[in-house]
Every structure is written in structure tokens, then in C-alpha cells.
Length: 337
Image (cartoon, rainbow, N blue to C red; front, top):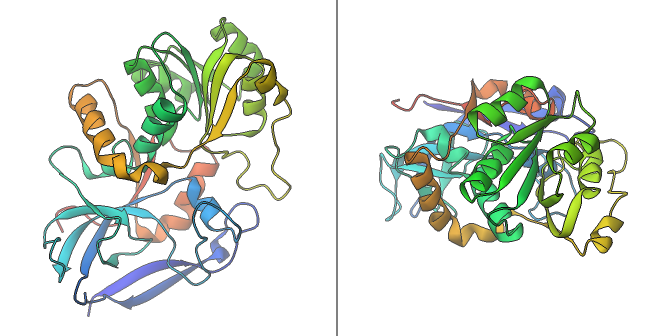
């Protein structure tokens, strides 16, 4: 009998998730019923948004229930099917959870072409982070050639793609990241014009230096003090895209809001939140354009891959400790198995 190893949410975390917030379980590998198919999970996507999904509060998506398999995006292979549109051997991406095998009825599951890009790329640049960057920058941020775009979390899965797309569109791009190595990566590998090390520099002073004409688009992944600093440097008519606030996710005190929000009034600027799921019906269009940029060498993808389903609790913490560069992916099984 084949065993399905799973990781379930055992308790609502207070601050950073700890090992006791998780339960490791084993079940027999499930069999598909009519209209279902069985996926062998190959790679799991680890994203900052997962921290919010653990909280029992109103959000854009229901929280993960206590005792449920932890929600996670994944790439996998169909190994059994009683579904007319999914065949054995096809590679798919969907929300399959932190487990080795998952049943699906096909809703919100897409087939992918493994020949176009390595499988982990479909969880990063061609997955949810890439779609977030694409629609957040171009639809919400309305970035235009010649404008100055600043992005925080610049060496992360979303921020790195935001900066590269902005360069493709003819913008000047300044990143904000933690540490000299991440800043070097943003400039030398991804083509940013500059990158500010928030751990070693005063962000407000550095933004004045690198954005002498001000910030036209600020793409925020971190919130807190860095958002506040950016608000002091925006231009008239600037657009601030609120994508995430990773600096605040594990707070045990109230979230720190922007104290410089009156800059929005003075500059007739806008601040708008975005959730990538709102653009799901257009993922394929964005994916085709981004795949073209990848093939042409205009867009680079970097994945930080850790092996082993059982390492999930500690690997997830890499996101909140700033230990990953690029897209954090957990390898569950080999592609050829």
C-alpha cells in the first residue's frame, strides 16, 4: 500500500509559525472517483501569503481549517484519472496542498508544458508570483516607459519579476532588498538600475539619491517603515501597489500602518491593493508573453529549491527570515518517478 504523507495545520500561529503548529499525518494514497484524477506532487510553492492563510480572520480567501492539509500551490503529474479532460502522464499546476498525492476535480487546475521551462519555474516566474508581478505592475501600477519604478522585496519571487518587467517596458528601476548579496543579484543578474540595502542604508536618504525625480510607481511587498519611506518620495499622480506586507505578517502587535499617507493627498497619488486571483481568467495571456520573454533571454528566473516534504515547517520560515533569493520551492519527488 502506498502512503500519502501530509502536513496539516494543528494550531493558529502566534507570531512566527513553530513546529507544534503542524501535524504530520499519513494516509493511504487515495483513488480517484468518477470525474476526478490523482496527482503525484513534485514541487510545492512556498509563499509569504501562506502565513495569512493560517489566521482565522476575514480575508480574500477562507483560512485553512484546523486539521486540514496546509494549502499550497504545486506542480504534479497525473498518475490516475477518471476525468475526461485529464490524462495519465500530463503535468499540471494547481492548489494541491502540502502532501505527496492529491485528488482533484480539475477546477483551477491548468496543464503545463514541461518543455517550455523547468517545472519549478511554473511555480515562480510563470506561476502565481509572476502573474502577481505582471498584473500588479502593468494593470494596477500602470507603469509606463520613462517612469521610475521602485520595488521592495526586490530579490524575492515577485519583486525580482516586477523589476525585470519594468525594465522590459522601458522604466528606470530601483530595488530595495536586505543584504549586499541580494542587492548585487538585483543589479548584476536582473538588470536593476540600483538596489538599496535596507539593512545597511537609510532607505529614505537612498531613495532621494537614486530617484532624483521621485517615484512614479512603488510596488510594495513589505509594508512597515519602508512603505513609509517610499511615500515621502512619490511624484504627483504616483501609483502605489499594495501587494504584500511581509514585515508585518508575524507581528504579535497591531500592524503598523503608514504614517506618511497624507503624501497621497498632496501628490494626488493612489494606493491600491491587488490580489492575483482577480486576474485568473487572463493568466494564460500573461503566461504566453512572459514565456516569450524567458525564451528571448529578456526575463530571468531563479528558484531556491529545498528537498523533502518533511522539511516544510522550517523551510517556510526562510521566507520570513529573508534567507531565500528568488522563488522558494520545496521538492517533494523527482520529475521522472
